[in-house]
Image 1 (tube, rainbow, N blue to C red):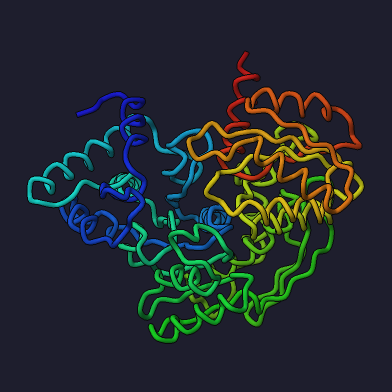
Image 2 (image 1 turned 180 degrees about the horizontal axis):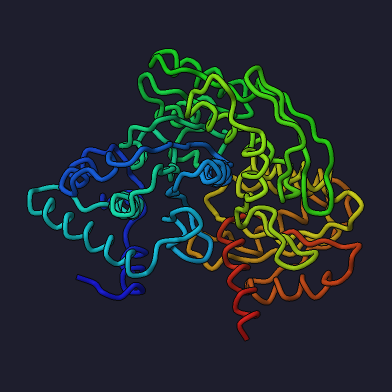
Length: 448
């Protein structure tokens, strides 16, 4: 038994991501995990749940849903990934992350069960499977009214796919994790659609006609009611200093002058998906009350997504081509009167060239700061900087590229050149690891 939180965290971080096979990223199914969950008493079956998959927008959509359900008087657990600064962020109830003591307790319960199944000839569980099992154990003890489970990777083979939800949600789908999910939108959509269950409604807002067709076909084969959010009309009424005001019209409901405390235009899609999911969850003939929806959206906050950490310094976790495209849309529509600067770092296993091309060609930043992540997965700053320079030169742009391997030093340099200069804005983008690392730097600076 491990009794110290930090010892538990270290143990978890040393576990392979997907399996204990020689190829640690192999993921061939959930039979082993099913055996473990049965050993624990199947805690994932004890609480009503909502299942979310997608390339981007899962965490934001989950948080919007939580806010709506909270305003309706329900307690809501949320299991998300990855975390930014604290592994406990992945397991939360309402506005509170799991305590260190409860984290340790859940960890030991799952590890004890794992030891028992290993003695019966089963395999040890992977990093994400352990966290999923810990979350299920914790939620069974806390007994929230609902739990929202976000997939870790894909859907069909994901650990969370053991649940049987009240409603299924699929968010934006784009090209990411292609090594594991397939190299086309159609193949990736099929993996995401693997969470659709027989006779359980599916709400989807993929941003892709190809993905929509794949999901619709799977839904029909499973007699799952389809709610395609793409058919919902909305208008943006106003984008103020730090809010977006918009109105929504669908065939089932109408909500006017909803406000999100964010300037990220992509959060409108996530809010629309959450609204559709909550209306679909209860299946009411009458739509949820407009005042409830309005108040819920005002409560929304999801860290690391167009989050101001200083007055003119913003972090955004966009880490694939689809997310960068939405990031660029926001920058060009909301910050077009600013001198834009970009701090960029990325994981080497990402398809980062299209991300960099979008930034260079659609934003043309005045200055680009390139650095490395504090991770084994980081792409080299020198290689990324060279790619930025080649794309800028090819397009005859005059942006300056600054590079450095020390993230903290590069961040501080970038901040010193923009802070308190209203005409300038710095975006830190390319990886959720980057967003989390910068949040830690800022928190440590405030503690000094």
